[in-house]
Length: 232
Image 1: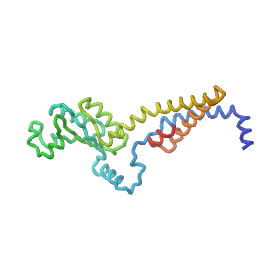
Image 2 (image 1 turned 90 degrees about the vertical axis):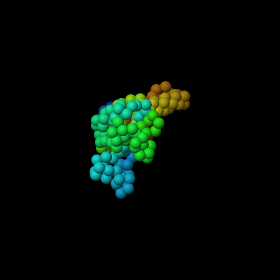
Image 3 (image 1 turned 60 degrees about the horizontal axis):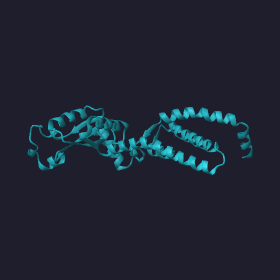
């Protein structure tokens, strides 16, 4: 250990230069690494849940769905909205009232169970079916496009919507948490250490280590969003 310490001290400039150079591929690797939001991908293939999802995608071309609740909208406008949603990439189909009866037919003529499934007061529900799994990137992109399309009078829910919200929250809040933690650590170090420069050196070292850690995940192909959120 003594020889190692002497080597580091003697060649500190080379080590610092090497550390800075390594930040470049690490940063590129961090940006290029796909973030995986699909929890099921980490479960064994033998589980019924995983098998069922694979069968839905392979046999029926649909592995996820989302409930879309529309409020204060006429039947004609709701039918137009359904067509817009169906035109979104990776939306396989949209189930609604007009799949059972023409919109010119009064809803009271429908069986009560079917009417209650699609209507509640001034709200009606559509079911969007996707051509990929619940947490796939394509499905989450489709959810984002649906929310842009439906506007303020409609709400997209379901498991795919929850995963999309988790993704948006993680991307939005994680940098804030890291900045707050960094500021608190810096404050503690400034209070407890005699040197004014040393705390900043500590923080730079920690930041570089985080970039190395996250950048090295490029070799694994992807990183779980949980790992990414907790790593820093």
